[in-house]
Image (tube, rainbow, N blue to C red; front, side, top):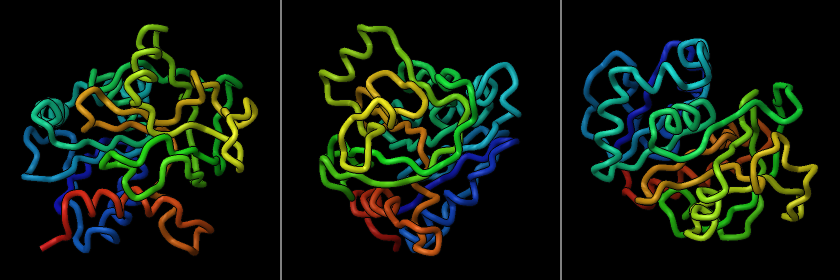
Length: 232
């Protein structure tokens, strides 16, 4: 499996994502600078968290128009899988690869803590390392993670089973108190219509080593490797 991590000015989780992917793939991903115009051949495009372009205008807005994103959009349309985490999720919504928008957290505060997520389905490349209904614990670190969309879009995403993760209580119940940022239907991660673009606000890449207190993020990366094959 080959992967490429997009690096924007202000990215601060690109190395974390590189380490998580390398540990799972057995090879380093390509690190692709935002000013490049073309991606190398790859099985997976990964867009990390951080503050791309300093979050000027609004999170992800400037990054969505960067030179490399034109090729990301082109590759995604052709079926290349894209994993977008935190600011990456904001970038791909701004680029039109996923619906909706990420607004300021409902409590108007930056949130940095571990959260519990309920895995909604296990039949996608991004979740095959988990079981449907499984509860995992991973960190969040965002100020604008409140996913919102119009009622018709939300209904379509729900009806088509395109929710990947929801914020939940440790026992898996959808406790409103567990919906830390106020996202509609406690949605923490979604899939596009084609099933090849996933966006999520929490950071699975930060929970792949036991020294950090949890390895619940490993399943996401292990599932991707199982889908696309071990490195040669």
